[in-house]
Amino acid sequence: MSSQIIDGPAGLDRLPQERRVVTEIPGPRSRELQERRAAAVAPGVSSVLPVYVVDAGGGVVVDADGNSLIDFGSGIAVTNVGNANPRVAERVAAQAGRFTHTCFMVAPYESYVAVCEALNRLTPGDHEKRTFLVNSGAEAVENAVKVARYATGRQAVVVFDHGYHGRTLLTMTLTAKNMPYKHGFGPYAPEVYRMPMAYPFRWPGGPENCGPEAAEQAIDQITKRIGAGNVAAVVIEPIQGEGGFVVPPDGFLTAIAAFCRDNGILFVADEVQTGFARTGDLFACEHEGVVPDIITTAKGIAGGMPLAAVTGRADVLDTVHPGGLGGTYGGNPVSCEAALAVLDEIENGKLVERARGIGEIMLPRLRALAGRHDVIGDVRGRGAMTAIELVRPGTKEPDPGLTSRVARRCHESGLLVLTAGTYGNVLRFLPPLVIPEHLLLEGLDVLDEAFAAL
Ligand SMILES: *Cc1c(COP(=O)(O)O)cnc(C)c1O
Image (cartoon, rainbow, N blue to C red; front, side, top):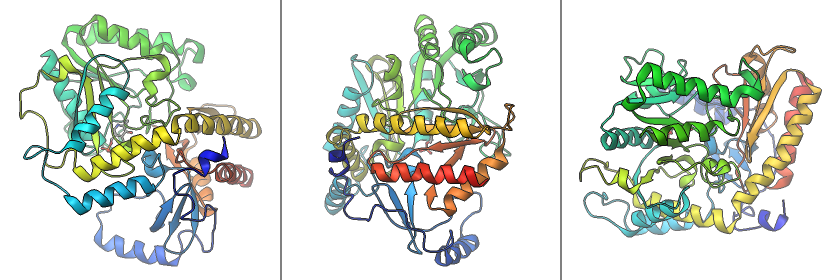
């Protein structure tokens, strides 16, 4: 990766780009705040690492005790352009000084339209598109299903094993994993059907047969169990996020998309986590040239300001009656300014290329690590979305205990990493795309040491 990008517009000069551990982690100040939190905040909301943040930018997060942690999480793939990216901060501040809200459904403003224009232009496919804006990934997916049902007049929705689509009633139903997302929160929404996912590492017939076999099984089950003519939409993450960065083999998504096209089913790509340059393409669907009928985006869209979008074929989106879609805050003007700054930054900072560069550094290092430690069963990912899956040596039996011990060890050494996966045995890495190369390498060294120590 060239250093000219590192010194570019991401504002890396504001905060020292260094790992610095000056107390235990979490330190005394964070522990104090954690006690206050326990008395005030509902415990159902948990934190990966309870260090209380006072500053963040480039490749670091700084806590209340003065520790500077290398950020391999980006707030779950959100701060792709870097935290408090100066362009984002500038436009947010300027907009906050003009007006913070009118409600687009009451009196509109230009930035909302500009974000929709940009998404129509940048998302896969050169057909005519429409977009509308909401607040969160879950809200985007939920709305995509509403639109798909409206446009097709059908009810069934197909999702996949290990999929994650959010925490609202419908999107929790679309989500695969019981604990913690669904447990005790039923009854779930009706007309949701789950299919086998092309998960190469765990495919019974072996990784080489995974793509075609998984597609065949999904198509067979849709046809036999639901009836293709009853299906409004297939909703799928092109690379699964919370499910453990499961990358389906080439050919799987294209086979599902072709089946959808042949049967009048809308193919909905949930790119909430994979979007906005994360995987080394602006959107992960581009990797195989898959053109979704509807695409949902959020996370990386606005540098952390709450915003999400539903973008789709004009003939699909145009069916819904005026007033059928929307929400009080959807497309908030401050968030829209942030999104416009993010899109500029992705282009000007060459962040698609940077995401690829990050993958080119990380994947070989992770494979070398797997060569030294037989607890690493699989290394996978694309661009700046990479992961390792931990198992008991010589088996595919998940080892979530070891996974959390490695994560904790990294945290204590000043590296913020996240876990994922249906079995809780995946370490996933989502550095900001503007992370300086020396921090990326140092983060990998910390991971190396954590494995060596355990
Ligand atoms: C995070 C995520 C969601 C939910 O987004 P929220 O903003 O948390 O509601 C939906 N789909 C995918 C793929 C996600 O990663």
